[in-house]
Amino acid sequence: MSALRVWAPGAQRVEVVIGARRLEMTAGAGGYWEVDAPEAAAGVDYAFAVDGGEPLPDPRSAWQPGGVHRASRVVDHGAFAWTDAKWRGGPLGAAVIYELHVGTFTPRGTFDAAIERLDHLVELGVTHVELMPVAEFPGDHGWGYDGVDLYAPHHAYGGPDGLKRLVDACHERGLAVILDVVYNHLGPSGSYVARFGPYFTRRHVTPWGEAVNLDGRGSDEVRRFFCDNAIAWLRDYHLDGLRVDAVHAIIDTSAVHFLEQLAAEVHALEARLGRHLIVIAESDLNDPRVVRAPEVGGYGMDAQWNEDFHHALYAMLTGERRGYYADFGRMADVAAAIERGFVYDGCYSRYRGRAHGRPASDLPGHRFVGCLQNHDQVGNRARGERLGHLVSSGLCAIGAALVVTSPFVPMLFQGEEWGASSPFLYFTDHSEPELAEAVRNGRRADLAAFGWDVGDVPDPQARETFERSKLVWAEREREPHAALLDWHRRLIRLRQTSPVLADGRPGSARVRYDEEARWLVVERGPLAVACNLGGQTRDVPVPGLAGARLLLAWQDGARVASGGLTLAGASVAVIER
Image 1: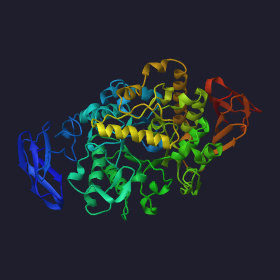
Image 2 (image 1 turned 120 degrees about the horizontal axis):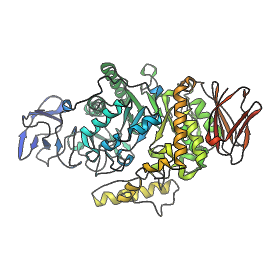
Image 3 (image 1 turned 180 degrees about the vertical axis):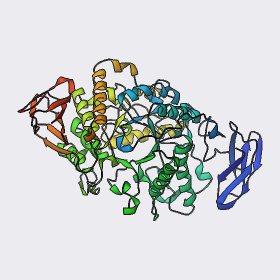
Image 4 (image 1 turned 60 degrees about the horizontal axis):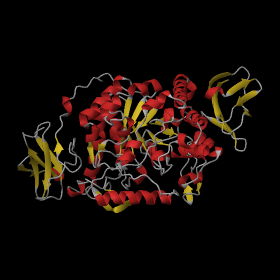
C-alpha cells in the first residue's frame, strides 16, 4: 500500500503523519484527499492531521494495535494464507446459530483461543457462529457495541490476522461465521470521524445523541462508508454474514433506505463470490418490511431477530413481567409467535401504550431468528442472570425444545447449551474517569427504569465484572450441566435429521395449550412437542398417539400409551405419530 486516501470534504489542508514525517495530501474529487507514500507498507503506522490539528486514526483503519486513540497500521489483506478456497457455506434456513462474545468465550478471550473450542460447537450441531462486535472499541474488554474503528478487528482479541485465523478454522470445520455490526451509532470514546466530515446530523436524534447522517448533505459518502465496511468484512475476512444491530435506530428518510442499499450490495457480492452471504437485522418494530423483497416495498434483509418469540417464551417460563415483559406471559403469546411470527402484529401493546407491529403470518419461519437467551436479554439484567439461574433445568429443557423445533432459525447464546453457571454481565473498560462514572450512573438509571433494585449492581468498569462473565468450561462434565448439554445435542440432531422441522413455510406449526393446566403442544406435521410446565405429573392430550414413537424425553419423564401421554412436572417430550 503506497497510496493513502481519506474523505475530508470540509478540510482546507490534510497531512498524513508517518513517524516524524508529515506529507501533504492533495485534494481530489468528491472531498477525498490523496497522497502517494511509498513508505506506507504493511506494518507501518500512520495518522491523518486535518487543518493542522492533532494526528488522528484513519476512519477506515484496518488495524489499531494501540487502541482507539493511537495511530492506524497498514494491513496487506492479500498476505494471509487462506485455506478455505472450496468453502461455500450453507443456507440460512438450515442454520443453527451460536452467539458468542470473544472476550468471555474462553479464559484467554482471543480469536486464537476461540479456535480451541470450535470442536465443541461442531459436536453440538452448530452451523453458524455469530460473533458479538469485534470492531475496535475503547479499552481491552467490553461488549463491543461502542466500537469506533469499524474496519479494524479489536487489538486485544488478536487483530486482523487473529480474526482471519478464526474464520479460516471455522470454515475448515464446516462452520459459517456471522459478525454483529453496529451502524446506528459510534462509541463516545475515540470517535474521531466527525473531525473528517459530516458523519452525523442534528436533524435526527437517537438514544446515543446525534444520528448517523444517512439522508442529509454529504450522506452519499457516509452511506458508502458503512456499505464498504460491510463488504470489507465479508470480502477481506471471508465472513459469511452480518447481524445489523438495532436497525430501528437507523433513521433514513431517503427513497432508498440504507438497509435496502446494504442488503442489495451484500447480495451482489454473494453473486460475485459464489458463496452464501446473509444479512440479519435486529429490530423491535415488528415490521415485516425489513425482510420483504424490495420488489414489494421491503428492505430485502434475509432475516430478523424475533423479539416477540423470545419475550413470550421467556415470560412464560420465568413469570417475568418487568418492562417489555409486561406484554407477555401467557401460553397464548407463545402460540401466537410460533404460528404467526409476531404476537404484536398491529394490536395494542400495554407496555408501549399504543398499537404495535404489522402482520407477518405470510412470511416463512426462516425469515426469523428465534432464541431463548441472547447477550441483551441476559446481560441487560441487573446481575446478568442466565435462564438457568432463574428456573429449573426442566423448564430450561422445555425452552430449548421449543426454540430448536420451532419454524424459526434457532440461536443459542454461549454456555446456554449446558446451563452455564457464570453470569453475563455488562462490562466496559473506559480510561477516561468522567466517562467511566457516566457509564456507571447511566447503567443504574437504565436498570432502575426497568424496575430493578440497583443497590448491588456490579460495577461495569471493574475487572472482576468482566472476569466473572467468562465461561467455566470444566463444568460441562458435571450435573446438571452434562444432562442439559446432551439434551441440546439430541434436539439439534433431531432438527437436522427431520425434514418436517426444516419446514419453515407459513402454517407449518400448530399450537394447542391449556393456560390453567399449564401444558402446551406444538405440532410440526407428524411430530408433536409436548410440554408440561406445571410442577406435578400430568396427562397431556396429544391426538393420534396410537402407534406413536417417543423420540426424545427430558430425563425419562414421559410415558406414551394409546390413550395419552403422561409427562412429569417441568418436562418435555417429542413424539412421532
